[in-house]
Image 1 (cartoon, rainbow, N blue to C red):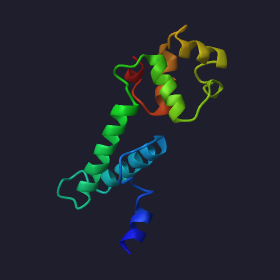
Image 2: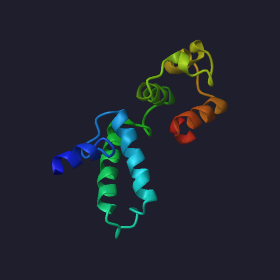
Image 3: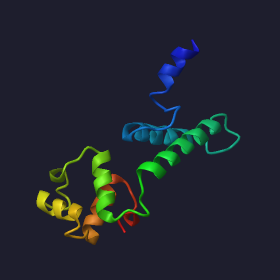
Length: 129
């Protein structure tokens, strides 16, 4: 019975180190649900689960999302990869040619592009500085 419950639970909250962007998104959704349920309080019975997921998320972010040391073009490339996007999939920042120039470093992101990318990917504008 425990195995059956585990098989139902783990697709909703990864109980192992996060291996890819899909598992990362799933873990974030699970963490948000736990926080909404009150698990942010250490006395809550689900607080240890929130802590475990938080550790998995932090480890994944440290290895797969090198924001502080990465140049803006590399951050954009990583976000595009994680979301399965191609250069032509970002019309909000320009044509495919503009995106290509941004990714190659021939062009820098402007404030409007940073604002649009931040909104699209749900990250802080500081991510691109």
